[in-house]
Length: 312
Ligand code: UDH
Image 1 (cartoon, rainbow, N blue to C red):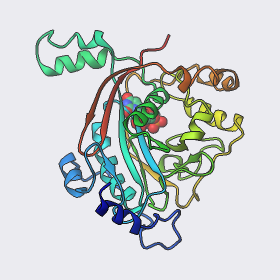
Image 2: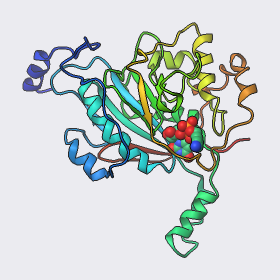
Image 3: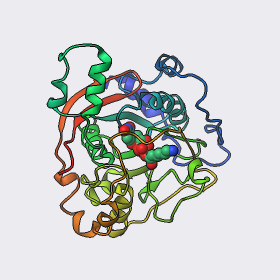
């Protein structure tokens, strides 16, 4: 640090821990809609203080936590634009230091061999999608945890968000808490209520030590469903409790969509979640294997492209 930098640092006070209501920082309930067209150029234009790779540090206070926001991803570019459009300004108002990571699942070398096989781009794209492997949300999030820490070892909080979920109230603070946090308590598709007491889906957050205590997330849930219940079990089995915002504040809008290809409901999920106690020690961040394909720093986010294999 130069002398000048040190002086600036010393005069800054810590960013606020929580939000005393009403707060001059947050605005409360937000209007969220997905009908006006959105472009990455607009998001960039409206967020000039976000640094390359989707990183931000509050300029006027010392942040208490460094938060990595991890989004499991495949073919949802349209949703991502809205997510970035809404979340960057919210996170800025919340005075968090953060980085956004998109964890993009791609198929291995076999599929890429189709490229150059000739013809039009859309045929190649069809071939790529047709030959795709089953999606695995929790394993992608484990990859995100590892890669975010490789990028910046100072991250001490990890927030895991689906790409299609937008908070409707900026008092729902994206940081880590004494206990693992479930943020998405009231989604529109569930009538703004928790669908069941142990629900941990959509958007959640764990500190680095909470995440390591549960051995991260399971790698063996291929396809849709069950992984969030397994994570809830891991939390309870390790003597922790889930914390949540007030139901009036933890409201979310989901961008409507059809079920994706290659993410069909996993029929094994009901039996698997009965066995978390046995599986969590061997299956998790300690057993994670993947092949990193590419890291690319975009203006509004960091893209981590990865091969995570396929179901046995
Ligand atoms: N995801 C992708 N690409 C995929 C599958 C999943 O990016 O192909 C990610 C994305 O971040 C998504 C998350 O994983 O938000 C969860 O997957 P999901 O949105 O499919 O799960 P959800 O429970 O929807 O929200 C299930 C399908 C509902 C179909 C309803 C038809 N009316």
